[in-house]
Each structure stands twice: as C-alpha cells, then as structure tokens.
Amino acid sequence: AQKITQTQPGMFVQEKEAVTLDCTYDTSDQSYGLFWYKQPSSGEMIFLIYQGSYDEQNATEGRYSLNFQKARKSANLVISASQLGDSAMYFCAMREGPTGFQKLVFGTGTRLLVSP
Amino acid sequence: GAVVSQHPSRVICKSGTSVKIECRSLDFQATTMFWYRQFPKQSLMLMATSNEGSKATYEQGVEKDKFLINHASLTLSTLTVTSAHPEDSSFYICSANVRGRTDTQYFGPGTRLTVL
Image (tube, rainbow over all chains, first blue to last red; front, side, top):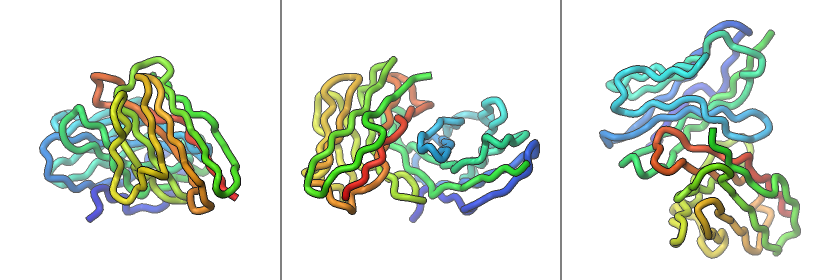
C-alpha cells in the first residue's frame, strides 16, 4: 500500500491565487513527520515546510501553510498568492518512527503550473 | 539554511565504467546521509542510508555491490556506481539532516548520470 498518496498529477492556478496540493499518508506510528519539497526543472529539492505528528498548530512558512488533519491522515500544502516561480513539481514526504531516524518516503508528486 | 553539495552535477560515461558521486555537507555535520534515485517523471526512491563510520543500509532491491557507499567523515559520503550500464542512467540525489534536528532534511542539487 502507498504510504504517501498525492492524487493530483497536475494542477493549474492563476498568478496571485491560492492553491491546495493534496497529500494523504498511511502509518501506524504515533511519531512521524510530514514534509513538503519543491523540485524545479533544475532538479534540486527545496525544503518548504514540516509538520510533526505531535504539533498541535498547523505549520506555516511565509506563503506556505500545511493543513494538517491528523484524524483524516492528510497534510495538504496551501500556497497563497501564487507566483510564476512557484511552477514546479511538489513532493509530499513522510518520516516514520523515532525522531532520530530520518528516512523519508515520497509521494509521486504534483506538477503545479502557475499562469499569468 | 544548511547546504549540501554534490559533485559532479552531470556525468556521461561508457557502459562498464565506474562513476563516483560525492555528497558533502558544507556547513554542518551529518552523521547520516541518504542516497536517492529519481527516474524521469517519477518520484524519489531511497537507495540507502549512509552512516558515518559504519556500513550503509541498503533498501530492498538495491544491489550493494553495484552501488558502493562510503561515509568516511561527518561531512562526506560517496556513491560509486560500479560497472555502470544504460539502465543505471538516472538522477542521483543525496540528503542529510542536521545532527539533533528532526524537522528538516537538506538535499544536494543532484547528479545526472547518463551511461552510453
């Protein structure tokens, strides 16, 4: 079974609008972490935001926020005020197990295209 | 933020040769580094976990004799693709987490390997 599921292969949004990228996860661990990365065409993986399983507040980093719904096992990324430079692949990832163990499992990604 | 470098960024080699890829943490110590492989239009797949001073832990299905990993110091891990074949052509990317921190994992810029 997929541990991380990203159901949107592609998303389109107009500049300055908000967009939500979906991510659901599957784990039986109590302690885990959820990450979002951006991968532009150059290939580098850019860390965007992190949510720990015990964090009560939704994580925010500038224009990025993570809509964490633990009971539904979802960790959607919200990008507010989209910019042309946001066009890229976006990957959701999960770290399972004790916090000292950092192995990540990635979803299949969502390609976001921001239009003028 | 923490910086991870990879060298080379791109390499083209003949079938049967070996290729070494370096991953360095530039401004922090990384007791653990991770090696991923990404085929075109696909997600990142973890190949192995590299621990400083000990043997790497390989994921199921990854040939340890083909993908040699050495983590000689707290800032350097190397991946050697031995006797490379065209099917080994891929994007190889490493990552590291800052010691003591669990909320981020920093990625290198990746190495694109093409085997002719």
